[in-house]
Length: 320
Image (cartoon, rainbow, N blue to C red; front, side, top):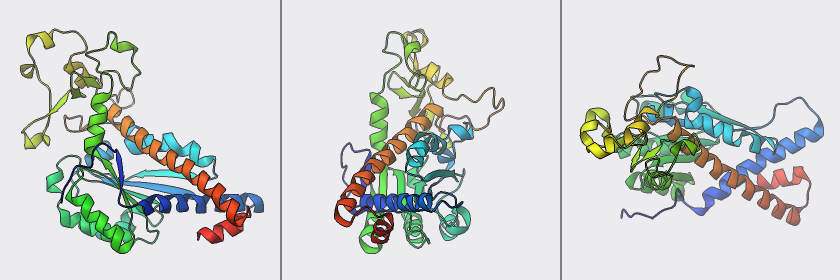
């Protein structure tokens, strides 16, 4: 039965998913501690986050450094480095591509053999066209990957997530859903540039992002050629809104992309591709989630030390 679980931004297929993520982080931390004590020239262990998805995941319309995967990298790399772990975020988003069958069947060749987290983000534009059978194939193949990555997905809560949850119970392939509905509710809770006294005083990432109930000056529409997301045009506004000052929804549309002077002729800056502020929000939220997991990992490490002692080799053997 399909139900709306409410407001949580992140949903886990089971409580074991968090334990799997903590265990993975602690193994790498113990490896780093052992290497530091042996004073060798081996590189630090890496924690690899791979984004697979469509044009929105790729960050089309923005600079590559503005994509949410790049923002995630900037957000968490120092926190992971404090544990001796090199965090690596890789963006493999591609426009006009679904998750299967090609990408599912060639997962090792496309995304590599070292993956700790694999992000599924293929349904941001037209979720109903991303068929369930493709997601089933994707999840099955991810469970067969040599490093058995933790799965993340950015999607609505529904049949796809429930099907992924079945794999957790059968094969132990854990997954974490970042709910698009919850993220949309969060966006509308951010300061409305049309309501604040002086929007210019807002931080750059919030300034002209939420304008009078719209995000980046775009609204849901019935145009499939625009992936059902249209820019708010003058004929959609009354005269008061049009003449209401710089903070009407049109300014959100104008401020959506910020690619100059680095890129003077950026392509794909269209209504259905999120702008840099949307990407920074998503990347920061993903980063916040992972940093919380790092905190929990340290608490778990202290618990292990109280039980089996502080020898990193003993702890590593226990975790493995």
